[in-house]
Image (cartoon, rainbow, N blue to C red):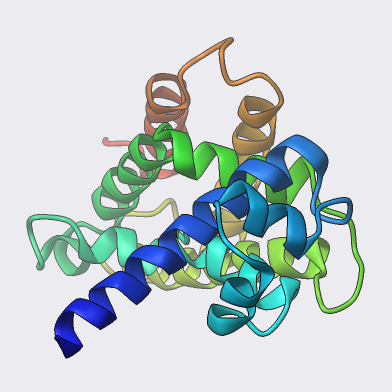
Amino acid sequence: MVRKTKQEAAATRELLLDAAEDMFLEHGVARTSLEQIARHAGMTRGAVYWHFMNKGDLFNAMLERVRLPFQGLVEELDDPELARKKPLEAIRLACINGFRRLEQPRYRRVHTILIHRCETFGDIDPIRMQNEMADEACSTLVDYFRCAARYHQLREDLAPERAADIMNALLSGLFHHWLRNHVSFSIYQEGSRLVETQLALMQPVNT
């Protein structure tokens, strides 16, 4: 019985997050009330407060469902030794993994909310959240580019920190461009080509 209760509570929480995603996307975060979210989920506002302290807590939980930490994408690769032996290949495959994930509707919708449907108010600061995500990705990229430099897999005239900045700028620009009109191109297909091209330009020229 306890297990069933926990399962039901978890299912209720997911339904509320689904409803929040719908309402935030349609009305924007600031213009959506917890009452609207509860009604959309077919529940009372009390159910919302049972699972979440406030709108900020709910918003953060919604984001957590689609977080894409770069290190996590690397760790999902089939070869656990790839990041150590071929760090540039690990970067490429991790990016492809992220692109594939972003094309799933939930990932696209929630990131659209964060970038285009969220204003700064209360304890919700979308700019800070975006900066934290970018800083996290860039920090991880620096580690892998430094590893590539140690194995002489990175051009000698390209500092790992600069390489990470370049790759982070490419990913960020591609991501924002795709979110503005996701039907115009596949971020998986176009992103895979761009990342492959960029990484090739960063490698030493064979002589």
